[in-house]
Amino acid sequence: MKTRSEAREQAIKVLYQVEIYKEALLPYDVDQLIKEECDIQDDFVIELVKGVIDKNDNLVTCINHYLKDWTLDRLNKVDQAIFLLGAYELKYTKTPSIVAINEAIELSKKYSDEKVTDMLNGVLDNIYHSEVENE
Image (cartoon, rainbow, N blue to C red; front, side):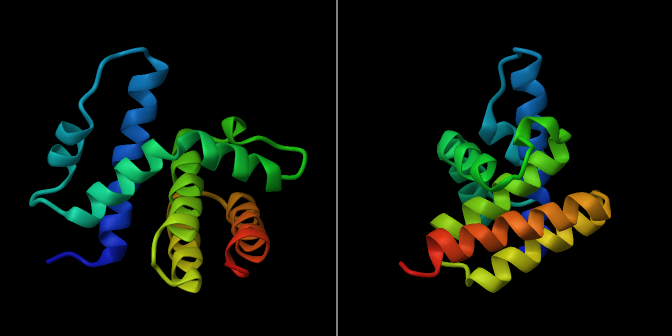
């Protein structure tokens, strides 16, 4: 049985693949991409991937609002996937906010550089304080 941290990492990989297919204007099947990434069906991965895809436009707008003099599309696709997953989990799931933020930061530490991790931390902190904390 995999941990939720491992599930998040699988979700990032699927979201990355989705972006590659979209950029190349190639057809893709999200369910098939998830199946290829996960050795067993994982409802948490499915929820995260489909949630990010479903809320993509809202998430991009939200993230861009808090990025200072920057836009999400300027980041590489892995970083974009991490930002989107972190924001989605923070805004739309029951995952405790501190866990959602910390998990995204840990993924960023593993796959990005320190500047991106610092940006991610700032964006997620702003989303939390401006949009999540008072709900």
